[in-house]
Image (cartoon, rainbow, N blue to C red; front, side):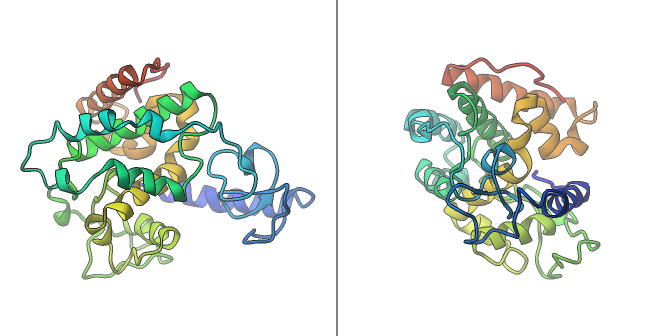
Length: 271
């Protein structure tokens, strides 16, 4: 399931502060509509130029992307080839759709568009490998037995838990924890803390939540190999020999999808 550690959050805050204070000639205040025509709005909300601002997670301005058509790569045959492997009784069969996935990307134009065309194909294969693993090839919408898990980090007072709600896995990447639901909701436009079930009730929100998490926590490590994406998503529960069977399941799906998309999987597949 998708987890975002406190350490990553603290690092993000520290980096944002560094960019804001240590590079005054390059970075302005938080962007909004304040960036000039030649500047990009970075993932942390600051104006600037260069790959740190215009590359992965660029939020606005002249963001760099390779211009590939995701729709031409994620064809109906590719998407439905995954979905149709789920038993007909699966709730996900009538929930997940290629149309919802492609519509979600309108909010995240940098998804799988950084680097070469081969890089894009590998990133798409990686995203769908993790989604297939997490949902049983789009069979499940919610984490099985998730309601019994405690996914409230009370130390994250910036995203206080609603005691009547559960922050267990939902959607293609099984978004989990209050500190993910809160910011995902803020970015997408739903009440993540008080209505986390929206991710399991609205297919478009479900895919937006998955792509949001990917762009926030996974996309930036794609250049380190597929193993790094496993670590970013569920490393504490699977990597370093904790659960090698699940790691291998993700790798098998990734290499399968790379083959279907006509791209080599690259190095460093395991975590």
